[in-house]
Image (cartoon, rainbow, N blue to C red):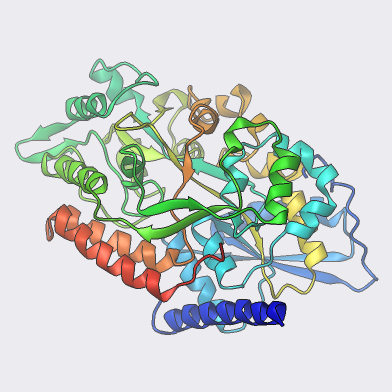
Length: 481
């Protein structure tokens, strides 16, 4: 009777979360080459997977689809695109589509959406397939830093096999550095070093800034979040879900003997908002200072492409970005030597933040075994090498970060990308609890009010904290353990 009641309780939690998310929407809101010896068997009927991803990637994916169809000739794939200002926007649109009954079998989702979808019961954990194909997955996980799959665990279950990830590093305009006799920052540079460099690069005509030392976009990833992390804080308190049988098996099977997983169990928990703590206030005050002094432009909502115009025309010296910017800047006409990348500076810590991405299997998917085969295939070299051509993102696989890959686009110090995980093992995923969408809207709203001067950072964060507490209460319980 106890087990039955527990099952009913779990189902009630799932339904309550779905109901809340739908109401929010309604009111406006492998691994080696080949197919990993797949045991998938089709009884003869054509099976179709509807896969949702970024609109800008559809053309490339259509060109690559045959590598999967050749392995499974009785399968069919339809890629559907979804455009949005940022991850929060695309998640909101997807939730509206799900509420309307649109069929989606797999969708490409970043860190921002994993716990949101999993907590509401919209997606299926991959545990049983990972266990079944463990002998085929060793090669993949040997090539991937443990922080990445850790970010894809929720309540002891794994929901993604990562295809890509990006840490927020500092991209530098080498022309502006050279013009100002500034050397490439050492790995141990500090916040004060950063400020002095940004101030030196900044050029003004009277009160108008012509060249900015630093700029950032108002969003969750990147944004001013890296300054919260390197000031040794986070938007939510951090904890760890208890080990499940699966997560305990996972760490012992794929990362045995790896000291960096000593504190990893069932996945990250972001439980209690702490937006108004002293270190977060200090970080926002610093961002506001840069705007008041004309070192940074006014901030706006956007994604990784928002500031490329400033940067490519030599109007900005530094900005937080990930490996995806290497390909983006190259596509905008910058040569490999026109930009470089370095670690974020040290403040009270030098902890970095990252986000990762891959495909989530929707719980409504009718062909889950086939969907799993696509997930595996998307993480294989056979798929990853053509997909990552042009450096549109940072590959999850460590071995795919090499001098040849980045010789075509830059940057010179490409090694910084993966060393952000390997040299700074405390580097963590951006906060993305099951309430991540309303959390992100609150974060960007009050950030904007502080940066515009409508509110002081202290007052903006006090209001942000109030709203985050209200949002968090609505989503409780967010975690089982």
